[in-house]
Structure formats: structure tokens, C-alpha cells
Length: 185
Length: 185
DNA sequence: CGTAATGTTGATGTGTGTCAACTTTGGTGG
DNA sequence: CCACCAAAGTTGACACACATCAACATTACG
Image (cartoon, rainbow over all chains, first blue to last red; front, side):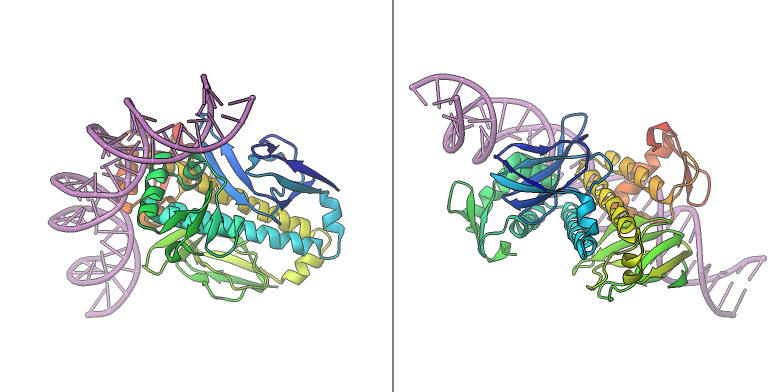
């Protein structure tokens, strides 16, 4: 069971890598994404401390994991986990949470307007990368947010700009925002 | 371990129901969906024979399951499954598949055009409700397809109409289509 | 300090949502 | 079995939110 450190923008694993040991994020933040043939990206998920990055024991993983900030990852051999007394139940719970997250993502994408999608995104990001109440560090580029929400980076930029003008969101650091009621979790 | 039969349009379980025994679909087809306050629906998933409809042992389920066609469901007590030798590994694999499906769904919704989304949908439906190669029975209303793809029923109708005009899809039964190469899995 | 990456803002076009009228299908009871 | 009605589907006209293209500003980093 080995632990490993990654810096911002480091690739933790790539599509095509063998599954094997299950990577659990100890600290930091990670995005999971796929690449299409035409170069488009789709961000599949955000992971925060405690989350597993994949559950593929046997097969290859079919997406990429990249550290958004310096992160610590622990690799659990699957056999060891499954053998442990409550290991299986624990893993099941982890997967249930991932599944719920993916369904929130689906729900977000089904909302048609940019505003609704982005407020859903902010709430998901708060839950995953959560700081104190009403405070959020967003270590994502506009492009990554666009790839998560299914919008374009310009629409993301414009919507955030409007929210800042209307004091629904205020910048308190390089990439840290204070969220006013309407966007709070 | 009890088995139960459901007719078309029967509700198998509703949001708020206690989890408990895990429902496995033996035969038939089921949609899973959530309802929003404003009455909109979001279809979360399609399930075919062999699929579990939820994995919530402890908590309440937070979505609805409705039979699309007459269906048979077997309810597994979770304790029994987890106790069995390969039960845990089996459940993990089932969940991995659901997770992969949800991610395909996310990918579909991230495609901006109606055509791309609907061809993704057709492929997913083929995999879930699969008949013989190139043949597909679609026991979904236009509205349900719209709620799955994040489009409107009018757009679904128009796109299918165009595909039929262009012989990309041909109706061979009340709700059965023959798919030409472009839409094949 | 200089350059590339990221972000902002404006002008314009278009795909799909919306609203509305109409048609077809399917189920029910007489 | 047919008549009727509600539900589902089709098709058209129109508008608007967001994508796209483009110029420019700011930030980050060597």
C-alpha cells in the first residue's frame, strides 16, 4: 500500500492504464475527464479528499485523472480491501456516493439554462472541494468548468462576470470566491 | 428472496421508499427518473435484464423506477448477498457497470447538437434493451426520450422524422425500428 | 521583462426551445 | 365491433439564449 504525491497539473493516471490498486485521494483535488477523437474534453467528475478515483480492479481505466492542486493519493490493493471485515461494505458505500454524484451531474446537464447549470456546478464543487460555508476555492480554468457544464468558456466567463456585478459572487482571492445565499449549498 | 411481476407503467419503487432489499431486474425494461419541484422530469437511467435498480441498503431511494414493459424483479436481501462468497465482488461489478452507464449519459448530454445526443441515446438504448443487431424496440414516449436526452419532445420528433426520411432509421413495427449503419452500436 | 496561457468582452448567427394547431394512436365502454 | 375520448405524436412559425468568431486584457511563469 503505497502513497504518492502529485503536483498541480500532474496526470495521476491516463485512459488505457491498467486498473489494479484502487487510488484513494487523501488530500487535494482531482478532475476526471475523457478525451474525444476530435479533441473535445468532457469532465466526468470532481474528487475531493476521501474519494476513490476509480474502481477498476481488472480492466483498464477509460478516463484521465489530473491533480488540480498538490494532492496525496494512496493506492489500495483491491484484494486487501475486499478481504477486510467491512471492506466490501465500505467500497459499496464509496461507489454509491460516486453514483449519486454522477446523477447530480446528469441532472445539472439536463437543466437548459447556463445560469441553472452553473449554480448546480457551484454547489457540486462546494460539496467536493468544500471549504468553510459560503467560501469556495475553484482551482479550475474556465475551459474546465465549461467542459464540466457543457457550456463554452465564454458563457462561463460572462455568467460569472454578471454574478460578480450583481454581488451574487465576490472574488476574495486569486481563485477564491465568497458565495452569497443564492449559490450556497 | 421474493420475485414480483410488474405491468407496463407500474411503479416499482418511488423516491422516499426505504432501500432494503436490492431489486434485480430479471426480464423486461425499466426507467429510473427523478421529479423536480416544477414538474420537470429527468430520466437517470435505463435498466435491462440483469441490472440492479438501486443499491441503497440503508438509506431511502431518491428516484423513481417504472416498468416500461411487463417486467420481473427479484429482491435480494443485502446481507445475504454480502455474506455470499463472491457476492461483494459481484455487486461491485454491477455498480461499476452502472457508473460507466451514468458516465456515458454524462458524455451524451455534453454533446451540444440534437443529432449527436440522439444517436448516443440510440446506442445506449440498444445496449440496455438490446434486440438483435440493428433492430431496436423503443418502449419510450417522445417525452421520456426528451427527458433522457435533455431535449424537447418536438426536437426528438423532428430528428427521428428526418432520420426516417433519410432512411437512417425505418419503422418496422409499432415502436420497433431498424437501424442503418450510422446508428448501429 | 517578455511571452504564452488564460480570461474578458463585443458582434453576429443559428439550433433548438416555445407556442400553437392539427393528426394519429390506443384504450374504454356502449 | 365500433365510437369516442384522452394521450401521444407531428408539423409549422417564430424568438431567443448560447455558440461562434474575433479583438483585446490580464495573469502566470521562465
